[in-house]
Length: 278
Image 1: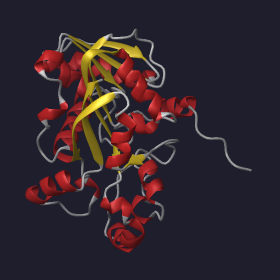
Image 2: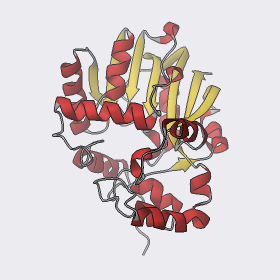
Image 3: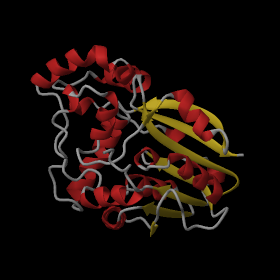
């Protein structure tokens, strides 16, 4: 008998139990050290050393910004520091919101918070000038509904920055590359915590994508550039797409900075889109 497909409630239960960065950090969740470590990993591993300014809203669209799927609040803090007039952090999981509130307190920035299902937002039409949504909508059953909702809550001419997992050449060619992954695993490659020890020996690339956020993660999807643009195009003008995120911390050796930057740009596992509402 075929298992029932995962639901939004399954997704919520997972992220309540395992908020982002818990289970991997060396520090207590909610501590200053926990957040500092998370920031360092996002900047150094997620962007190979420097945040990409293209991710942030342009000056004319900073009046009211929604950080959708805020998790433990990294982007919420960055948007508040940028000088956005109103910043709202929204997440499906209460435990994520609690971490984000704590992070804002520690960093001395002001934001509002709201528990939200990205497939069906409670905000009124045209509530925001910009939506920031990084690595979120690939974790929910109906990703297309999330895209529609992002467009709905944006004012005319509003913008968005959205990223999802990218089916890069490593994932596309994984059946051929897996023997190298097995060798790397024997050398100690892998990600700490959350039941991800078998990541480099998995046979199915789709399973690697799902497992990246934890063995119990119910939903994890990756997209080609064409698929991602097709998902967005009914509601947005896609101004630009680009890649980031090559997780060097998963390797058993340290990547030279120049090599990490090259892999980040050319073989990133996240595809970012800069969007304007149609």
